[in-house]
Length: 134
Image 1 (cartoon, helix red, strand yellow):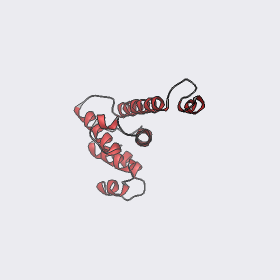
Image 2 (cartoon, one colour):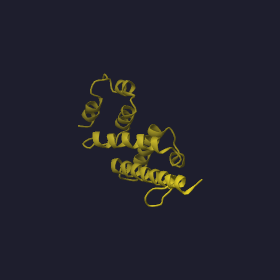
Image 3 (spheres, helix red, strand yellow):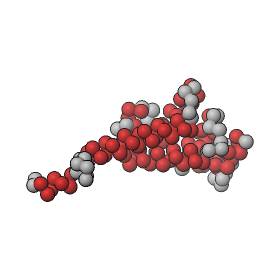
Image 4 (tube, helix red, strand yellow):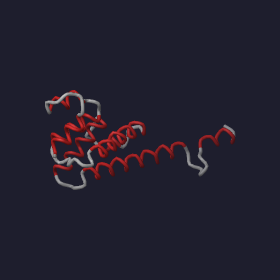
């Protein structure tokens, strides 16, 4: 490999592709933790349970260690869903399990099962969830 070929392996700061990917993963993981804490800021047993439910729903595992090994694309997809949940529930207390389950299911596109849990249709599930808490 000549010098011209190896230049493609590094960015302008001299960081390798591996380092860049590792940094992207670290940032995504920190963002995920930050959004989880924004939605459930406390450390009560119930809030820990809801955070664990969110991780399982978004990433298909109960192991944070496994989440740290996921490809950056999967982490980003979960982060986008989590940010959407945060935005859609700003005025909705996320402190009851039925509401959390509904919102998590909706975020994954499981609107039929989530809506049926609350006797509603597929229409405006988020509004139904907000309505549950008002």
